[in-house]
Length: 84
Image (cartoon, rainbow, N blue to C red):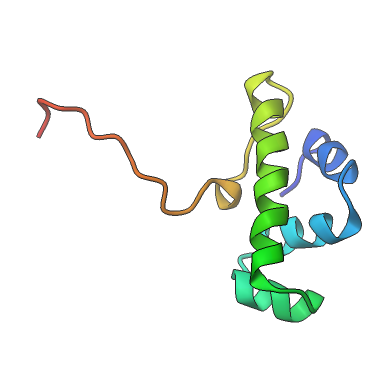
């Protein structure tokens, strides 16, 4: 699932962040990841947020493609007015 450029970007982050991102892509929830890595769910969210920031920056420059699992869950979708 990871492309070479995404792996290169991920390799520049701490091992704990790498594990969090890999488990996220595999479909694990924050609490499950926290239990596996013996950290708090807050740490999971913070590490993923920091990686996501770097990921979006790389995507803006066309360096990587973002897997669906890493998109912000629950982000509001814009509804265009005047459409049904």
